[in-house]
Length: 221
Image 1: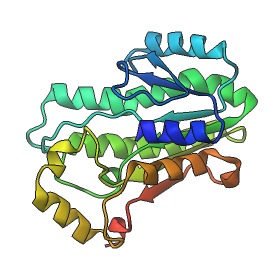
Image 2: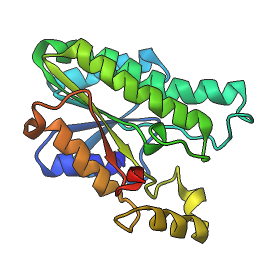
Image 3: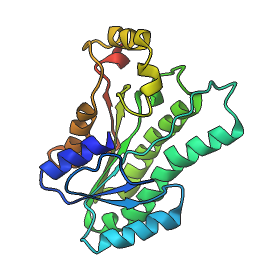
């Protein structure tokens, strides 16, 4: 999803920096990558200092995430803490570090949540809780950073990625997912990227604190 967002932004003429835990397996042309750990405030501050040399940040997209497939009764304290630290804490820290400057100049923040933060699912209790927290954090931050900065979130259903590879290896999962989605197909990374870039743009200048479900209608049932 992050790579798709980067490609679309570069294609629209944006200068794009990617903060990643490691070097990307398939670098996106035109995107500069900084190895960054969102669990570390120091790491984010160091990345922000480098990016500042390229000019002000107008758009921040938080697309990092961690999933551990364990039910609520089986999830360990360590797994819960790790997921919350990455999925909620990582977003919180990046918003604090980059949002401070954006609050003075203006800008747009888009967080990648999940439909699992809206609907209960059996594919990872801590993940769903973390994404629900991220959705509410988006609302709170939208209030705090208004009127200069808009803050929104996108909540996709399952997209083929490294995070969901284990699920899509099961043909029954894909068939069941397609059957549950009114639009009848699996979401693509580009579906999510299009929504993110629209929310980041001036075309949605009066939209803030919202979470857009990019789910083909699965949440309608």
